[in-house]
Image 1: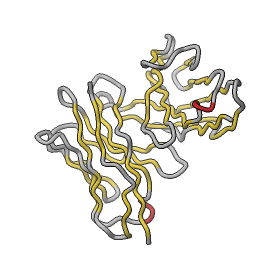
Image 2: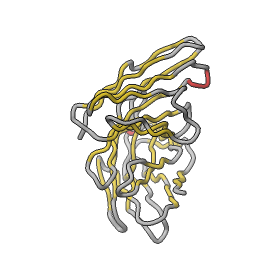
Image 3: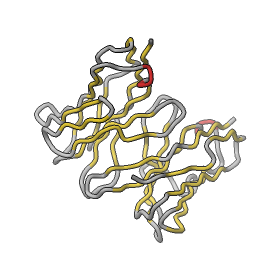
Image 4: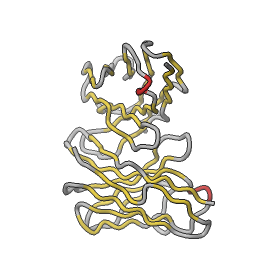
Length: 112
Length: 115
């Protein structure tokens, strides 16, 4: 079955540091890939997505590229802010099937 | 994108009681989903709720413990029955829009603590 593996956290960075959160997946076919963010005390928000190989999703300075050859969808940001402190979830889904498979989440802590 | 609200936002309940969580969407949707997020864990799908039919439960979840209603295309409820401390979690509802790319939108969640 499908699975998503994320790097374990917490990831602790200073403000303006470069961020990478690794995500790899196992799936049949050609899934769509997503990053969701959960700020403290809130529900999940879709951060970005990519629906086919080599697509790059981007939003709020975050980027992730769908790499089919390495089955990866790593999240990157060039300069993090304290307000980026949250839990980030990588997920995949298949066209025509509504359920998503989530990774375990990676907590990001950014200090001033 | 869909706007989803949940009630209550949080609750503290006693063992053996039941709590009903409401999920309201600002537009009509075919499918609604209920997830559980246990402390420090990822999201686990409890069930899928279609309007006018019985909910479909994932392995490990049963209707007697988590009865779901879906009376119309904008509303659903999840009841957590006969609660125990192990039911302490965040419960989230979500809806799907933007077929066929499975974009899901989530409610803010209900944080449940069972004593």
